[in-house]
Length: 387
Image (cartoon, rainbow, N blue to C red; front, side, top):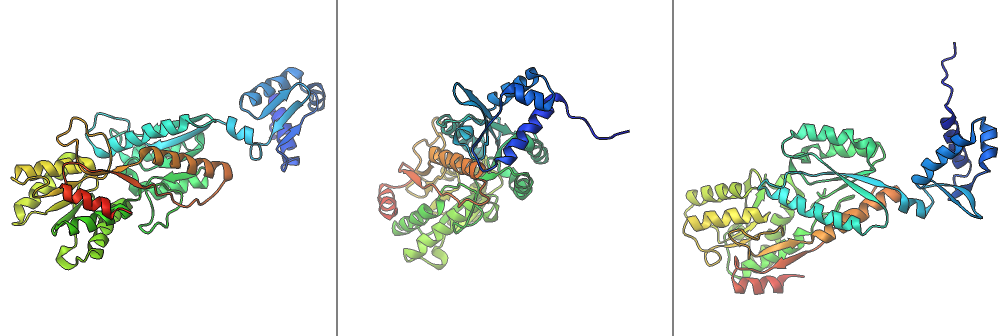
């Protein structure tokens, strides 16, 4: 008894077409013989050949036209086939907009910008958001892995709780030929690949220099989960320290850092409140890794009888919508979300289309909102210090 499976009529047509592509692998298209000739050669009906043709035409892999005959497209070499191909890109995104968590607010803002960036593309691209905060991190990771075979790539980095699993996800996807583009850099000194991250280091350096020149000597950098948790934390902190050093500061003048457990306003409120109760000297400037963290810090400072910005300057660095909050006019860095999204899409399409294993990291600059949580003099000095 033979164990070799006999291909179905449709499978015979597909195998024949694959063979034609292999024979003409260096050509963008292959002109096919008439349908009747293919049907006779394969010993299948013409209806079967037409049925397969309809599927391939719908997928952009086959073209017909008066005077041109039928062309089988090599998608790796044909520009029009690339434009017509439907891409599905998975993103590690939370889906619960009601949570008062800065990571969620930031993620939704970037995703909104991503949809705008994709709408400007000529090809059809679908985003597939994966995971929400009701699922355990391990469950989200398994969900992302299950979708690997159904998508063309993965954009990673909208959930901080998945950072410990980043290497596992990158290895799993890349091994399957599905590129990963990260919104978390791998290196403090701009030696990252396949990533897009706001350039916090440059402007944090300018901020440290300006605040020192304004007379601030007890500066604090407030970040999430410590310096080792994310490169962006290190960029803010070490950039600020370098700015103070280049302005003439050193020793006790260098900024310290405090850490929160999460990116919620209540987390920073508790951290700052505890720190104020333990020390006789309050900080005179707090640079926060997020706008929600800055709001929590302001609340704790004001409850302790300190005035912002007269006693303590507070600076945020996210750029999410603060309408309706206690300090919508906060001084802060504004991440260029549209630019981040445009670069994410560009790097992802470059990796998919050109099969590039490594694409240099992209670092969009930030903009600034000079508001009411720093003094007018500090705002002037920050402007002067910026590149």
